[in-house]
Image (spheres, helix red, strand yellow):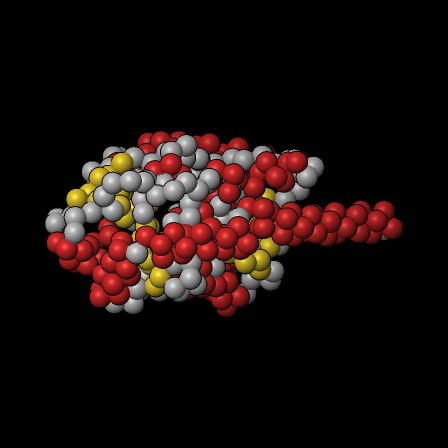
Length: 360
């Protein structure tokens, strides 16, 4: 994995499947490249050079560890910021899966550094063409992987473990709009600052920002709190509605809409930008609402604020939709079948090579 438990992509795309795969008889080992101290430093604005250096020092043993496994499941890349030929040298002939939940290739292809663009812009295409399987979280990433020449692609959305999300009625007290993310993505909230200020002038409300302590938005009553895995569901339950504003950029179009799924799992209606995976996740007017304009943000949030019956009905529909389409119970069997088939093919090829070697 790229990160430890603090990294949402690593936790949700790989780690949450490990118990299910282990119960099915697969021997699974999780190995984060960057430890939680790296992300902790990143999110707080502290120096992270030491944590990064430690990660590359640990990578010295990667080749020996890889030789002990039949199949690798790599989140994005094996060695961040290093060229393809180094990864190829470590991987050699070991079959591997690549997993993407963001348009990560843009980090290299659109880097401000000419050296990074020269050395790394084609790295992911080369990795994709060598992968036994590529797993992507949304349509945007699927079409990207296809265009880059990936041989075998599985579209597997980022989903939720419903056992951790038990809906409770909305709280009493002031209307509360919720947002969950990281200090890096909280900046997206500035895009809807004016609609939020307009709503606040009509009737004061609270904006609960989960995962970006210290975040403020002038003209809006903001309560910003730290994120933990143990408290995220309970914190979302304190909200009446969730929001997910996004800019119309290549990076944002590659995002997976997971925070929408979190709101829906807690039976909360939501309003979101019609960007990328949001368009697939949202059934407009039934499970959530898409806001194309600033006025849409005001209209939809006002409607949900003033019509508790509609908000409750929408939230219940959202929960049912997640149960049917975006839950671990739906995707885990698909992933297990895919990996089991892949391992079977790998074993068959090894057996064929062994027989051919004996014949010679």
